[in-house]
Image 1: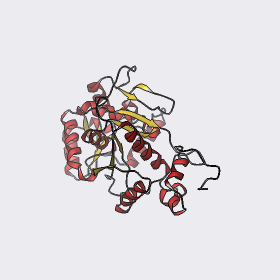
Image 2 (image 1 turned 90 degrees about the vertical axis):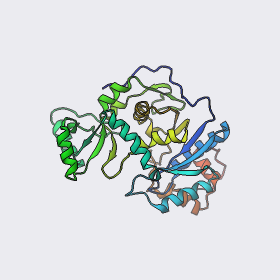
Image 3 (image 1 turned 60 degrees about the vertical axis):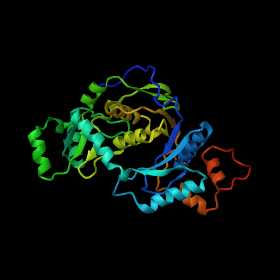
Image 4 (image 1 turned 120 degrees about the horizontal axis):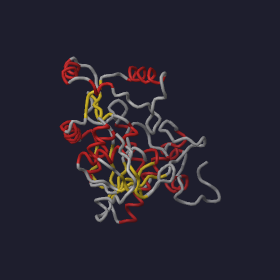
Length: 314
């Protein structure tokens, strides 16, 4: 199940072509300073390298994504002076592409349905922790115990016919065995300064969810399909997604998709040293604009420009 390998030469298939960057927010809230930093960095890098800057709307979360938040994304980016190539790719308009990728993984025998609820999974983990510490993924979430892997095909079919809710999970052990050794090229750096050729460790995430009964995709599956479809050669994003790259490299390998170069950047933190949240209105771009801030003020606050002697924004 171990997909780790000593770093080796792992260059991007797109490294010799015109670089393509992307900013891919979810319309489940208003943008804040952290989003501004990532969007500006991608836009600036595209301009400096003679590349393209794309905007993608990751709107597969039907319960949380709203049109007003999507409209606000366009308004905030335009206010910052960012332009992008049209048309904007909206994930909700490309579900058929994700289904096609999912079906390929199913045909490889790498996906299985799991029928436990979150509460049931929590209870299974608690039972196991009474005997020994149970492993967690890099985000601190307990790994899925994997009990549904042992269900017979007949039992799986019966549960699906009954209308039971389910998630489609990646059989990580089988996927790692098929993909073999994986690395990625890191232009930026990880949380502990990791850079250059980095060994991918997707197994650290366990049997991740690729889709659900009501939604035929997930963040991990959609993002690798989108990057390939859009020809993205440079993935520039926050360090909170650094270790997720292992999952993305695994899916790219299994689906035969090109691998981009990755540049993970520092996060913009609040006064308590925590990652910014969309619910933190004090750092929301809309709120800063209402207070009289300018795009240059935002650039100063995220570290692109030196602070003047008398700051415009408190």
